[in-house]
Image (cartoon, rainbow, N blue to C red):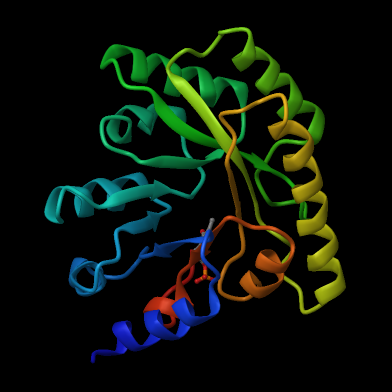
Length: 221
Ligand SMILES: *Cc1c(COP(=O)(O)O)cnc(C)c1O
């Protein structure tokens, strides 16, 4: 069994049924994705449009590609034809562009709204009020080519477990409150290699795992 297979098996043993694993393959070669594909894994995440498109072209067409990184509006059109789920919707203007590009090709695009839960200033994301406003606009039919499937959040990069717990817990509360009036919401994307155990304990339905499956990245981004 190769190294990827071993790490995937180890992670799989820890992840309960009902929590989906997105294998974050950014910076790793197509061959590494192919190795996991041959083990039956289908969900992969990338954070750069160019890399995502290049790998999508090269690899099997039944891979479910997740866009997890900050997305610029002028690049939306490249991924809308094939992307399985966009995790990183962080503005109404981005949502409008996804809707416009989806409409052009008659494809409803599944999206998550990215919520700012970390205390760090640098992280992208919406605040609670903005999330509610966007969902209201969606409910009024303003974005017919977008289906909001849920929320995504990234906790502060810290060793302070109680802080991470609080941040994930807050996101879960928001998710629970908003998913009642928004029945298309069934996905809560939270948890990365360093904090997925906490995220799952707090109610995550989807974890985005890079280094715990692929090993350390040569450079971080
Ligand atoms: C890189 C990345 C991950 C995975 O990070 P790991 O720590 O390697 O698991 C998850 N989510 C986002 C948004 C990322 O950019």
